[in-house]
Image (cartoon, rainbow, N blue to C red; front, side):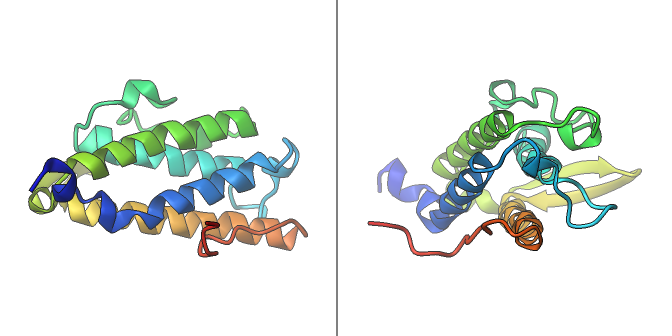
Length: 174
């Protein structure tokens, strides 16, 4: 078997489409539309999208020590602060798209390099004084569901404001 056939990338191919559809939705939004919230106590669209990008770097580079954090807007993934933590500095579509694209590059690199045998490797992280153990497989599933969950939040916010929602599952054009 060559390295490509050992890669786990083919098993997670659809995830790249989720990212592309999210970027497509963000690209259509004005700066004002990126400020929309589903409710007063919820993040604005821009903060939710920024959080999605930052979490990828946290897990892949911060926890798993994968290279590349410096190629993203989040070079220090374990500092505990993300763009969403500073609502006084809202981000525009270009910044968000850049963050989603550069962090997707990290994801794609891991999917290309990792093999099925690597999925069960255990990594630890300290959070709130507690040691937690995570595998690559558990975090891949966490990141996929995290992207889908927050894309749904953004989609709902768009919908309640009369804007075009994100359809993550629409067929890919040939």
